[in-house]
Amino acid sequence: MSSYNEQQKPKVTTRRLMEMKQRGEKIACLTAYDYTVARLVDEAGVDLILVGDSASNVMAGNATTLPITLDEMITYAKGVTKGVTRALTVVDLPFGTYQGNSKEALASAIRVMKESGAEAVKLEGGEEIRESIERILTAGIPVMGHLGLTPQSINKFGTYSVRAKEEAEANKLKKDAKLLDDLGCFAIVLEKIPAKLAKEISESVSVPVIGIGAGGGTDGQILVFQDMMGMNNEFSPKFLRRYGNLASIITEGVGHYVKDVKDRDFPNENEQY
Image 1: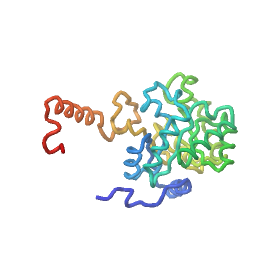
Image 2 (image 1 turned 180 degrees about the vertical axis):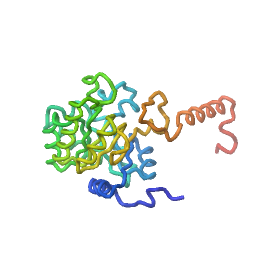
Image 3 (image 1 turned 45 degrees about the vertical axis):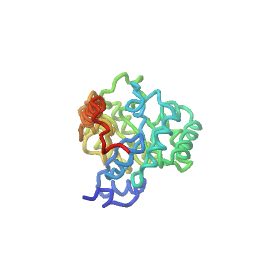
Image 4 (image 1 turned 135 degrees about the vertical axis):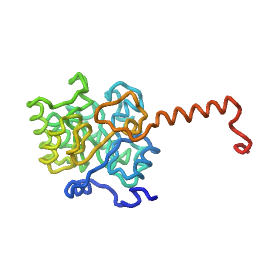
């Protein structure tokens, strides 16, 4: 059986994502942090691959996204881009590389593009980072916005609970989404906000809106690969659907390997030279 990617050959670009929104085709997105997973995800037909700063959690074992550095993000992104042929590859600018200094933001984005081979960057925030977005866009670098629950601001929020439930925050989010659209961002991620609000924003802006914990009314969805494939069973938010149980498969397989080695069953005569 051919994969979805083999049937759907065209390279995904920011323009193609816009065309997908215009014709009502949902956009499927996932994270990836290494060559092997990126290649498999790309072959399966995912439209957009995000090298997220969630690598800080799932790859480096940190409690938040804050510790990861630009150098680390570029290293992860280098591996991912080598495994991708069809999907659009986007890289998160990590905390501290764009807030409050638009010149540093541009320098960070340029490093990502030149050193990793990625095709776009993602930044968290709205009006607060307007100058950074504008400066990056003037260099011809596509920018993906991110509103709602913004993990880089976890110390400000103090919680990972649903955002924009109150009218004031919801109104600010709608205003920021319009700003990102007007500035020229090619897409916007909405994380962990009420589904009704996410649908309203998706219908009010011209660019694709990708949701995570934002209901089915957005133009697309994104999940963390390790979460949706069941590698991290401790993380079970309401919005997460698991499509595999790799944690059990891996531990069972490794357990069998350990037993075979201990029992002198591996390698056998057919597995040596």
